[in-house]
Image 1 (cartoon, helix red, strand yellow):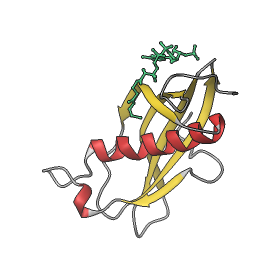
Image 2 (tube, helix red, strand yellow):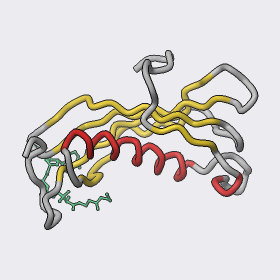
Image 3 (cartoon, rainbow, N blue to C red):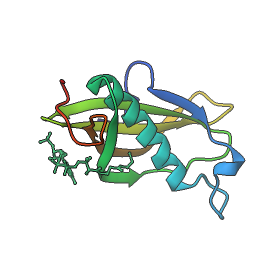
Image 4 (cartoon, helix red, strand yellow):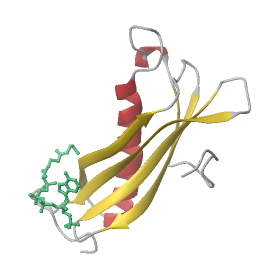
Amino acid sequence: MSDTQPPGIPTIRTIAMPADTNPAGDIFGGWLMSQMDLAAGSVAALTARGRSATVAVEGMKFHRPVKVGDEVSLYAEIVQVGRTSMRIRVEAWRRERHGDDGERVTEAVFTFVALDASGAARPVTA
Ligand SMILES: CC(C)(COP(=O)(O)OP(=O)(O)OC[C@H]1O[C@@H](n2cnc3c(N)ncnc32)[C@H](O)[C@@H]1OP(=O)(O)O)[C@@H](O)C(=O)NCCC(=O)NCCS
């Protein structure tokens, strides 16, 4: 992905709240990662038509800080489907509450595995 905001509707759009800050007052990186995981999980669930779990996160990058009140948009897209796994690229973008401009704040590739009812890996297409 480039520095251009991804096209289309984000998988998740939310507001960064004071409860999500780190001790320095910026938004906690773990909160951002959890939002990314939620976005990737939503795409995985739809793709696998069922339960799935995160098994790996590659290339986690924090480009810019997120501030309280920012609107945070999570864009998630499938980049590869294996037998039981799905690789999903996620970018987070922030928009300052009173402004028009967006900037990319994070990116990573999440790997999810489709699971059966017992929690074992199953084919994505099953
Ligand atoms: C998901 C889980 C059941 C898979 O166990 P497993 O059957 O031993 O997994 P396998 O080694 O057969 O791998 C399954 C798939 O994941 C892929 N995979 C496994 N580990 C991976 C890793 N570290 N990075 C990338 N892909 C990985 C494998 O390549 C395989 O893909 P494919 O079927 O498309 O070829 C098990 O790892 C698990 O329960 N992990 C914990 C998940 C979890 O709790 N996540 C956090 C909360 S959602």
